[in-house]
Amino acid sequence: MHSPSIDSEVTWLLHRAAQRMRCASGEQAEKHGLALRDYIVLNALSKTPGLTQGELGKSLGLDKTTLMSQLDGLERRGLVVRHNDPRDRRLRIPVITEDGEALRTTVAAACVTVEADLLGAFTADEAQSLRHMLVTIIGATPDRGSCL
Amino acid sequence: MHSPSIDSEVTWLLHRAAQRMRCASGEQAEKHGLALRDYIVLNALSKTPGLTQGELGKSLGLDKTTLMSQLDGLERRGLVVRHNDPRDRRLRIPVITEDGEALRTTVAAACVTVEADLLGAFTADEAQSLRHMLVTIIGATPDRGSCL
DNA sequence: ACAAGAACGTCTTGCCTCAGACATTCTCGG
DNA sequence: CCGAGAATGTCTGAGGCAAGACGTTCTTGT
Image (cartoon, rainbow over all chains, first blue to last red; front, side, top):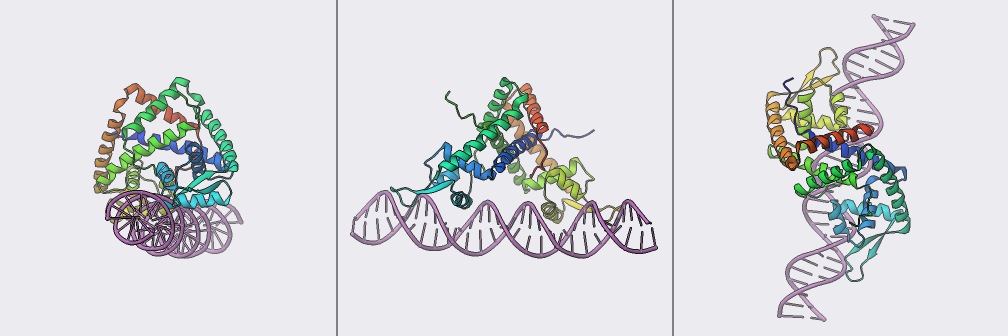
C-alpha cells in the first residue's frame, strides 16, 4: 500500500518492549506485596546508600513530594528508616532496614530470573550487543529526569 | 570490570532508552503544539482507521475515559471528528480530518528524522537486529494493555 | 413484538502526582 | 554572636487519570 509506515517504529517497539519487561518485574514485585515503585526505591537505597531525599529523588527522576509519600509508606511497613544526619539537621537520610533488604533481595532474584528467561532466546553476543546499543542510545540523548 | 550487579539491568536500560526516545518524539510533537499522546492518537487514527472508541482505546492501552478527553480536545481543535456509525448508533467512530492528517504527517516526518539521527550510529544490520530482538521480547511477554 | 441481557459511550467521584508556598536549619560575612 | 541568604524537607491547592454508575442502543430468545 501507499503506507509511509516507516514511521518512528523503533521508538514504539522500544517503548512496548520496555513496558512489557517493566510490567514483568512489577508483577514479581507485587507478588511479594510491593508496588513497582517501592521496589525501585528500595533498590536505589541498597545500591547507592547515604543519599539525602533530594538527591535520591533527583537520581530517580521522582518528584520530592512523591518520594515523600513513598518513603512514608515504606517506613510505615518497617522497610526503611529516616535517619537524621547529625551534621546537618535539615537532612533526612533514608536507610533500608534488614527486613527491607531481605525483601529487596528476594524480589531482585525473581526479577533476574524473569529477565534471564525473557532474554533466553538470545545468544550472549546478541544480549551484549543489545546492551551496547541501549547504552549508546541513552548516551546520545539528553537527560531530562527519568520521570520514573 | 567489576560488575557483580547483574541485576535486571537490561530492563532498566530498556526503560531509560525508551524514555529518552519517547521524550525526543514528544519534543518534536510539542514543537508543533501537540502533546505526545495527541500525536499517538492521531497516528493510530491514520494507520488503522474505522475503529470505534473502545477498540481504539484497547489497542492503545488507553482508558476509555482518558481517550474521551483526548478526543474532546482534538475535536475542539478540528483535528478529528466523531462520526456516527449509521449501522449501530451506539458507536462513535473518530476520524482524522485533513488538518489533522497534515499535522500528523509533519510531526511524523520530524520524528523519523530524529530517530534516524539517534540510530545513525548503528549499521543497518545492527538496527535490524535491534528491531528483531525487540519484537522477540514483545512476543515473549503477555499483553497487559500497554498503559501508554 | 417484546423483554432480558449485553455493549458502547458518557458522566461523576476518588486517588495520585506535580507545582508552589512555608518552616526549619545551615553557611557566610560582619 | 547575630542577621541575611540559601538549602532541605514538609504541607497545601490544582489538574489528570482511572474505576464505577448511568442512559442509550443493539442482540437474542421466546
